[in-house]
Length: 303
Image (cartoon, rainbow, N blue to C red; front, side, top):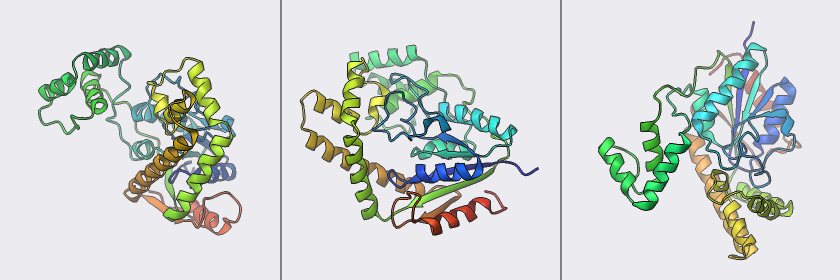
């Protein structure tokens, strides 16, 4: 029997990868799996670009805003979903902007650290607040040749959590899927214009109201979910600290910088089949590109 497919649809933000993934999943009867680091958080909907048809996806809305979620947790949970689908004979389509998640899962990374113990994280944060720089000194004692940027307290703390945590792997090998990675690529000027329109649309949908509602419900600005682009800026708008126009300008700039990092990442993505687009994929007028992508998906050899 021919094994199921495990497909990844990748591309910078605003490239249309969600629309493409949903079209592919519809054609194949495949299970969609979210691979975006912030769409896992409940309540953070508009600014993270969550898809409309959430019931079609796995790994959406699975965490409260204060919970930590990283690549190790993703590989474990996505691996469980994929394995279940494999044994049911169902194809799987991954889609999301967090390239590390997809690479770790499809390239078989198994030495990923599991999430830290909350008590350990709290203790390390308290120590750093009381004695700034103490965590960097502790890391140097434990790992004199560390490659971690000692001026980045978040990375220093995370490395200490890894060193103090369990040593067993957080992931596991996948079943023998037929794997494919599809990458969308657009000219920078066209992508930047799409990002401007996307931010405008999100703000019109009520992104600021969503942010204010999250704050009113007690979600802390220090919560991991609030690291998603734009939310802390809109929180400042809600508090009267900056003007809405200034926040919008910064959100657009931050999103463009993020898209640039995504494009850089994708250039080194192993096994990625890249497809040049003249505009973001929206399902209309893209038949030639979709046909080429479909040919890539159904070709007999695998990665």
